[in-house]
Amino acid sequence: MKNRRIKLAPSILSADFSRLGEQVAEVTKAGADYIHVDVMDGHFVPNITIGAPVVASLHSWTALPLDVHLMIERPEAHISQFAEAGANIITVHVEAATHLHRLVEAIKGLGVKAGVALNPATPLSSLDEVLPLLDLILVMTVNPGFGGQAFIGSMMDKIARLRRILDGRQAKVELEVDGGITAGIAPKVAEAGAEVLVAGAAIFGSKQSAGKALQEMRRALGLVS
Ligand code: DX5
Ligand code: ZN
Image (cartoon, rainbow, N blue to C red; front, side):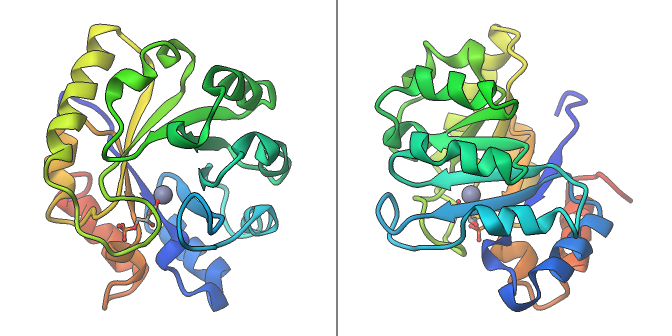
């Protein structure tokens, strides 16, 4: 893992929304690094989830960076709302962007870190021209739209290839993975070169409390003894 500091980003998609604030506070206390917020519009993906007001409300419960993953069509029409709501990272899908370069510049112009997500079928080469502008690349390890799906095994090689590209270019871009991450898979994706691990069902859908599940994942990664 080459001394890379692994970060954990619990996804609130699988949280109990009737007590969202408490659940976010719980994973914050248990050592989360980011809070991952999945925004779905019922068009780019089949489900509808939450919007900017929910992002704004999370600040009363955590001081952690809010990592907002937009699974929406026409992201350019909504990024300013999420920036105003206090998103620290805004990630858009390359498949939803007609003018990706302009969109990334616009996110950065709002004073927010810019991420780009790739669906499992989208090649790494689609980011070649914008890579120097990015703060984060999100490799989807499931097809987006639902929590609790199984990790697509062939994505392990995609993560490793992206790691080689980033290291080769000495790029300061965080490599985030999202989908099907469990305490069992987490060390393997970290070994392949991921540094930010999103986990929804494994944290908030676990039989144990979200805080305990997060600590178990941190232990599996060797972050605590
Ligand atoms: C899926 C979302 C994920 C989701 C991950 O479309 O982008 O962030 O919450 O959930 P798990 O960890 O349950 O696969
Ligand atoms: Zn996500």
